[in-house]
Image 1 (cartoon, rainbow, N blue to C red):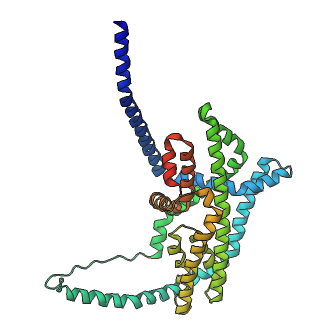
Image 2: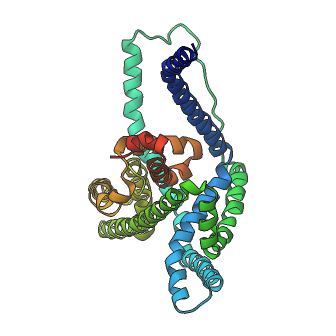
Image 3: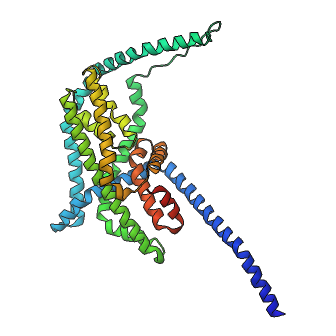
Amino acid sequence: MTQATEKRHTDADQARQPERRRLQVAASHAQIVVALGVLLTIVYYGKAPLIVMISAVLVAFILEPVVQLLEWTRVPRWAAALLVVLLMLASIGIGISVTYARISDFIKQLPTYSDEIRAFIIRFRRPAEQIQSTTESILGGSTQGGTQGMTVLRQTSPADAIATGLGTLSDLIMSATFVPFLAYFMLTWKEHVRKSTVELFDPSHRRVAHATLGEISAMIKTFLAGNALIGIFLAVTGSLIFRLIGLPYSFIVGSLSGILSLLPYFGVLVAVVPPLIVGIGQIHRAGIAVICGTVLGLHLIAFQVLYPKLLGKRLALNPLAVTMALLFWGSLWGPWGLVLALPITAMMKIVFDHVERLKSFGGWLGE
C-alpha cells in the first residue's frame, strides 16, 4: 500500500513538472519585465546625473593612456591623474581662446547670413505659394464663402530665446563642472572601483563579471579611438575641400560638420547644415552642390569603410539595432542620447552576451 501511494505521488510530481517549468519561465520573464521597467524609470528620471557619469567615464578612458605613461615614469597615480585633468582643462581653455576671435567674427557676420538665408527661402516660397493657390482652386475653393481664420504668431526675439534657455544652459554648465572631478576620481580609484564592482556579484558569477567589465573597457577604448581618428579625417578633409571652393570660415565649418557627421545615419542631414548656412549667398550653385556631395561622400566613406574596419568587431551591432537605439536614446535624452546611443547599446549587448537568460537579446542586437 505504501509503495503504491509513493508511486502515485511520484507520478503526480512528474505530471506537474511541465507546469512548474512553465511557471518558472513565466516568473523569469516577469522578473525581466519588472527589471526593465525599473531601469527605464531610472534612465528617464535620472537623465542629468547619468549623462554626467557616462561622460566622465568616457573622459577617464581618454585620459587613461596618458596617466599610465606618467605612472611608467614613476609619477604617483594621484599626481598623474591630477596633472592630466589639469592639462585637459588648460587645453580646452587654450583651444577656446585661439578660436574665439574667428568665432566672434563669424557671429558678427550672422546678420548678413540671415538676410541671405531669408532671401533664399523666399525664392522657394513663392513657387510653393503658387502651387498651394492652384491646388485650392482645383479643389473647389474650400475657403470661399467662409471667414478665413487668421493665426497670429508671436515672433520670439533673440533676447527672449536666450532668456528662456538660461535655465537649461546653467544646468548644463553646472553639470559639466562635475565631469573633471568625476574623471579624476575614476582615474585615481580605478582598481578599487573595478575590484569593488566585481565583488558586488555572487562569488560564482565574479569571473563572468570580471570578463564583462574587461570587454566593456576594451569596447570603449576602441570606440573612442576609432571615433577620434574618423572625426579628424572628416574635419580635415571637409575643411580642405571647403577652403578650395572659397567657403568662408572653412576650418570652423569643416570641423563642426565633421563632428556632426559622426552621428550614424542622421549625421549627414545635420552635418550639411553649417556649410550650407555659411555658403548661401557667398558661393555659386556649383559650390553648394560640392558641399552636399562632400558631406555625403565623407559620411559614406566613414560609415561604409572606416567604421567597419576600426569599430566593427568591437561594436558588432546590426543596422536595425543601431537605428532603434538612436531613436530610443534620442527621444529620452535628446542630442546627448544620439551621441551616447552607440556605446550604451554596445555595453548592453556585452552584458546580454554574458548573462544566460539575456543571451537571446544580445543575439538580436548583434550582426
